[in-house]
Length: 232
Image 1 (tube, rainbow, N blue to C red):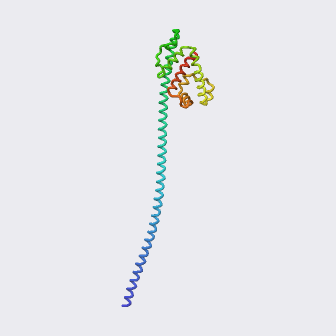
Image 2: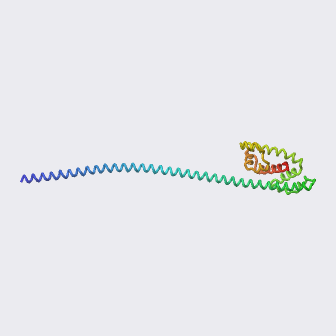
Image 3: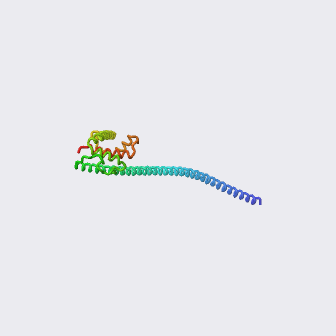
């Protein structure tokens, strides 16, 4: 009986030892799995951090590129606006100068007609030509027309202006820095005043003291002087 009881105890101890061994094995496996999981989580966090930094860098680069593109587009738009404005102003100025040249040509045509008819009285009413030929400068137009019809007055009053305008033309040509142009004769006054660049240069040289009306009057005087004193 004691022998049977002893056998049962040994069997129970063996079973407990086996269960303990099994438990320890499972515990070891869980610890290994836990360490592996911790490593995976650490690696995942590191990867997430790297992805976040990369995403931030890509986003910043994209925003920087977008800003640069918008700046280029803004600069291009501003340049286009300035170009269109300059083109419009240039067209208006050319139209105004063409109108003045056409008026001067009509004055010259009337002058030659009167000269052909050999009229003695060339002062008085200034040939009866409408004073609105020079828009906004009626008195100036009448005075220059009278001078234009009188050779002595033409040389007395207009010759100094021609010399002045010729000198300005030479200075403008020299300011361009083109040695080939310096060797050439200064262009005719009407050709010189038809250049927008010359009028801009003269306006800047006068430090802004010349208004638009002043420039128109000077242009008109230069054309009359050129037509009056130039050789036929």
